[in-house]
Amino acid sequence: MIMKEMFEFLDELRESGQINMFGAPAVLQDVFGISKKDAMETFVAWTEQFEV
Image 1 (cartoon, rainbow, N blue to C red):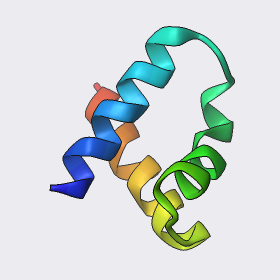
Image 2: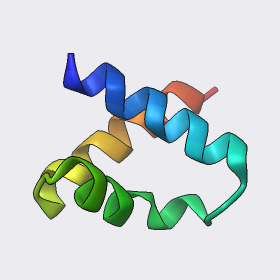
Image 3: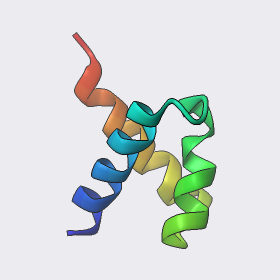
Image 4: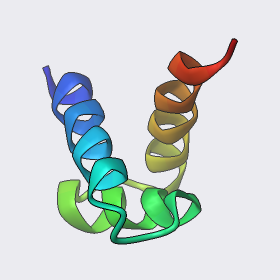
């Protein structure tokens, strides 16, 4: 599933410390070739797993 792949990618990106994660949607667009809207929705869904 592509969502799982993107979540794993975001996990690795976060752990690498290479970028501020607020820039991650743009990286998702570039790497996965998805729209800005889809990238933002994916990023928001990924961040929701960290809510307490």
